[in-house]
Image: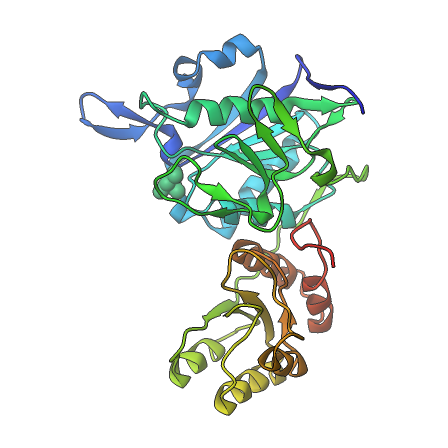
Length: 348
Ligand code: ASP
């Protein structure tokens, strides 16, 4: 057991992208407006008391995270890459709506990340009296600064929200109203903040010790086919015949099951034949796809559908974008989909 400490001299870099967290009430306009992030110390004077040395980059204009895009993920990855050596940890202030997508995307875009990248946001704007922004920002800074044996305590892309630190690519927004906006159904929290911040070291990814690099090629030619009883052939064909399509996430029932109607199976077979990758992901939040369990799953396995096991939707989308961006042979992409690359899948 090494010593855990928030190094007093930690140098942090904060990127403010937008979202509810940065809103303050404008007396003149009578509405919420994005705050000027240079005023962060005015809104959270506690930061000055902690004595962190930090720099900032703010998006102009700040965006609602519904407008997040792969282009902005690339920009974020480049900002972090260019400052990687200079800072001990990074904090991304982000709207909660697509935070799990951004955290997942960055986890797959980064190779050999050995420093913390903590995404956080808030359900109530920083300018509101009952805001959750302060706690979320202050604790995220503490986590980003934490070291053990002089190495970053959490060398991962994470989401910190409402006292829990989650692995980013395991996380999902689950509530629009409660302060507990996020959950990680298939992987335990990496830390919990109470009187102390309790890190669960055994769940945190190890340091690779290798040089940090970024993947900045993403390919968005993918589709999603969500199963529901009564889905029509026209709806299935519309997705599978999308121009330029390279992969489809099948959002399936239970352990990965779909309907067994011959027309449906032959639509899937024909898509696989055209080289389209089909990734089976369960609509359930907890648990895993198990294609060998029911006859319907066995049929999917036989036609070459890949099991997404316990991957989140956000991780499935962004992992596919990053893998497709590498222009690897289809069989290699399928193999990597079945492999946990950044802790996104539970090892069998
Ligand atoms: N719509 C906002 C966003 O995601 C919600 C939030 O910040 O929590 O940008």
